[in-house]
Every structure is written in structure tokens, then in C-alpha cells.
Image (tube, rainbow over all chains, first blue to last red; front, side):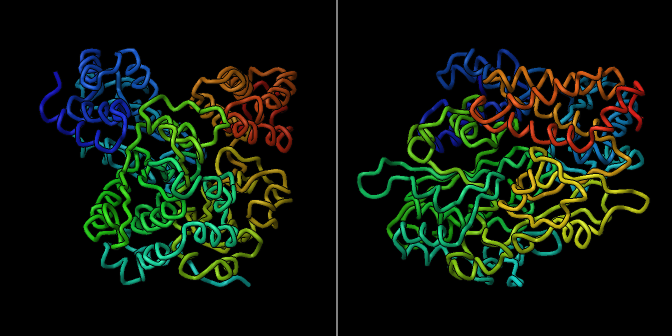
Length: 154
Length: 426
């Protein structure tokens, strides 16, 4: 069941579209904000609320990379792997992150604190390499500064 | 010499903040929107046509001409829509971020003007989800504009109505493609749509729709205020206005600058970006994002506008240059770019989903010393299938550009990977 709060938030967004199911991406983002990710059960609840088929909604959910269909850690680290960051050494930064966290890209630490994921160009190429942790952008990241950045995320 | 004015960025505070409505008013904010509403919609479109404003998202389509296909008058279908394409995701591009973070009211004002020209009832700002600072500032600016009576019912006390919403996207490069964006706004997978029908007559929910890049929309207030002749004088060339140019890679001073349209590649690279870092040599550059052909030393004196860069065999694209230096491997760079395009393909048409993943694997093999001599001809031949007419949208044609030009300009580097059976840079 969607909570009253989730339903209210989805309905507020629904007013922006002439067709009910057009709100589905906003709806998935809203429930993900409350629950961390979108489980099969959550997907069914959202589909029912929007009077869509589960299959149609899952087709949408699995298309968009910011919708998580698997559990993630308390914090998600996105490292940019696009061209400007590549020129400035993002592969080394990714390997450093992997080593510090003891996980590969796509995995979550055993304590559930961090998930490490690649992301396409974050649009801060004059400060490459960059990473995003949750909703915060960090620029000019180096192997030296990255530990200090991660400390802020408990 | 062009006029030395910076209509897009002059009001952006140097401290990284954004002007609130009061500050925006103090620089003449919303007067252009107010004045445009006094003009007939077709007159606004005419002004934009005369200004030679071309779309800043990369394709360079003349903005006024695009609008002229939208049906106007009492028999036109309603609601009509405007979507600001704020899904900035072209690798190497960071210009719309500056405009939205630095002066969100300028975008809103530009959108009000565009909506009036096409008689739109509803506007969306389609913003990529990762732009969280832009989202906060646009939300606040939208609330201020509603409060001031510039949005909502009876805007500027003219009896006209305009609703404007912020839509936060959930990722995928495909959403920046015009018709992919429409599908995403409708809550669908962002596959492209076949054209015709064109969005101008049948876009969002089957109604007339214009999709326009953020930077393009931000140009509208100064055109309305100062007129098309003034706007054309901002440029070195026939394409009107200023342009946000950028540079990233191993240059001394990577950044973003508002300069006259048609500033040379050399001036951007050497004066504004400060040239290459010490000890690093220039090899080539992508002039406007990942989906543009490489330019090299011989092209440095061309002017960065839509026409001149095309004559040199590339495209100005987004105008934000990505610079390749001699310490980075050209094959590795192209492998990175092709991986990006392959990953971001929506899977809708075969040359793209099949061809790009195949080329990506072949480039990875080359980069790791497992390439064969015939790979280079295979790759060159493959890019000929990624052309408009074979694909629904511009993603695969864009992917072809860096690869085909790298095979031309960096052929020896590709060949060394094959003969030495390793990456010479590793």
C-alpha cells in the first residue's frame, strides 16, 4: 500500500498532466525517495494507484537509470565516466573508490552504507573528474580528497 | 567588431548565487515578456526569424522558422505546449547548468515569450534529475513568478493564462532527443517518434508542441528588448547573437565564456582556456560535445558557428569543446565515447542498438591490444550505416562523428595498437 503521504505527493504532481499515467515517472521517484528503491511490491502498488498494468510501469521503471529496481545503500555514489572525466583520470578514481569501499561498480558495501554506480556526464566538465553522492555534486575530486568527501555520509 | 555585450550571463552573480526576483527586476527583468505580450504572436516569431537565432541544443535549426509551423489563431488545437529542453547530458557540455543555476528567471522569461509566440497554454521545464541545484533555484523562481502574476491566470494582467511546471527526469541521454523527451514527459520510455507528424503539429498528447533548448530560450528576452538588428550585431557571422563556449580537458583554464558567435576555435582555446597545461601537447578537439567530429591543428582558425564548423567537416554542436592531449590515447577516448552511445541507445532501431554495441566491443579489443588490421575498415564501414534515414533519431549519427573522424586523423595511433598488441599509452 502506498502511504497517505506518498499518495498526496503523487496527486500533487498529477495535476501537471492531462493524462493520469503520465505522472508515473514522478510517482516512481516519489516512492523511491521514501523507500530507497522500487521493489516488485511497490511497483504493483504504484501501478494499481495509477490504473496502469504492472508490465507497462516496469517497462518505464527499467528504462530510467535513476529508478532503482534493486536495493541500494543508504548513500549512492555516482562517478562520472564520460569523456571529459575520462581525460582527467576517472578510471583511476573509480578504482580508488572501489578499493576504499571494497566493492566493485554496481555493488553495495556490506554495512549498507554505500552503493557505487557509474553515471553519464554530470555537466561539470570544467571541474573534472566529478562525482555525485546522493544529491550533492563534488568537483575536482582526487584520490586524496575523496575519503574526506565520503566521511560526510554516515 | 561585434558589440561587446553578454546578454545571457551579465546578470549572473560572480559568487555562485542566483538573483531573486527583485534583483532580476533591477536589471530590467520581465520587461521583455511584458512588452512581447503587447505584440501579435506572429510578430514575435518574425522578430526571432529576423534575428537569425539558431537552436543552441546542437542542431542549429532556425528558431523562428521552427515556431512558424505551429498552427495559430482560433481554429488551432489547444492546449498547446512548450517544453524547455533542460536535459543537458551531451558529454562535455555544461552550459545550461550555468544559466539555470545563475539566472533562473531569464529562462522563465524566455519561455513566457516563446509561449506567447506559439500561443501555448502550458510549459514544462524538462530538467535532468541530477541537476539538483538548478531544480531548487528554478522551483523558487517559478514560485516567485506565479506570485508576481507572471504565470498562472491573467498573466501581466493581459487576460492570458500560462501554467509552467518543472519536470524532474529520471536519467537517460535519449530524453534530450526532441521526440524522446515528449515520450518521457508523457510517462513512457524515451524512445524517439517517427516524423512526420512533427511535434509542431502533433507533439505532447497529440497537441502542437515546441521543444527548445535552455540557452536558445534565454536569448529571447534580449531580442525582444533590443531588436533583431542589435542582436545580429553581437555576432561575427550571419548566425545571430552570442554563444556560450566552453572548454574541458587538459587545458590551463577550463571553463565557460559568453562570446560573440563566430569566435575562432583558437581564441577560445588559447586566450580563454589559457592553452594546454604545461608539458602537454594538443592533439585535437571535439568542438561541441561527444557527437561531433574531431578537429585538429589545421582547423584552429575557423569560426565557431553553425555554418563554418560544418564546412570544416564537423558541427558546432553545443559549443563546449573537449580537448584531446598527447598524454591521453585517441583510441581509448573514442572507445569511451562509443561505449557511452552504445549504453545510452534506447534499443529502438537496429543500426543503433546492434551497430553501436558491436563497434564498442571492437574498440575495446583494439584498445587492449586484441585488435586485427581489418577492424579499422570494419569500423569505418559500420559508421556509414549510422546515418539519418537509417535510424529514427540522431543518436547513432552522432556516435558516428567522433569515430569516423578519429579513424581519419588518428589512423597511425589505431595501427600502433594493432602492431604493438597493446595501448602505447598504458
